[in-house]
Length: 330
Ligand code: TYM
Image (tube, rainbow, N blue to C red):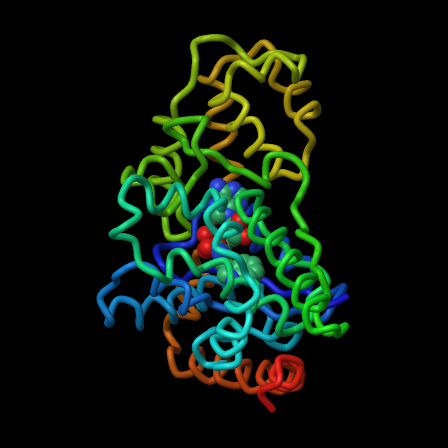
């Protein structure tokens, strides 16, 4: 079992990232060989001030360590420090089809109506993601629900490459998506759109950097409906905001939706929201204090990332060499 996953180092880590991916990465460290990276090459799909990009890489590394990624167990690195990712991406560009990329929902959502003005990197984004995964012959890719289509595309690219060049080089990976609400945490302002760093409203998401008051305020202001909580989970279906808050509570405390509802059924948000805020504060408070500690030592962060990149390059080099050989370039 080899685990590979990445996160874009743009914006602060939010609750969706944490519950959908990072806390699951942390749990997998004891079960498998894990490689985690900051997808800084992917962040080139949109314009970001160079200094902001540079500092956000360290900031995200600090957030991952604070969340429990342990460099003695996992390999953590910045994608751009391992040039094999970009090289394999270019090789796979010969295999991926325009039609496949045109069907990606992330491309359609992010490019919107302005496809002519979108960057080529935004269109090619899923091929780089396939390279990230196939370079290490990952078997499991822990991600939130929104990345499922990209992992499926990675499988298609792997299978087509193996067939076209008559090799058994790439391992088609499995998307490894958590159960329950954690797979898709929704915005606090709109239960039908996912919690996302690109949402302009700060009130739509909870950040790892939010202090206790900010967390309590965001929960207090989260959109809800006037009815009390039901006992039957199926009654949450037409109530997306309520369903999301109950799901978040369960994901944070480790309880099922049934268990959460058994406790809060019949109660209103006047009771439920403070309990949710407390649960979130207990989860995030200790992580936030650790974040402060890691931020204090940027040189140590750089050192860990560099040593992670060296180890990743050793694992990546043989696959890349075989890929070059397979296509007839070496
Ligand atoms: P990114 O940076 O958008 O998000 C990082 C991880 O957080 C998950 N996630 C969520 N999970 C549940 N609910 C949400 N609201 C939510 N928002 C984000 C994402 O699913 C992801 O697991 N393309 C990837 C980065 C990437 C990658 C890879 C991932 C690049 N190469 C190779 C896996 C393997 C991305 O932009 O994730």
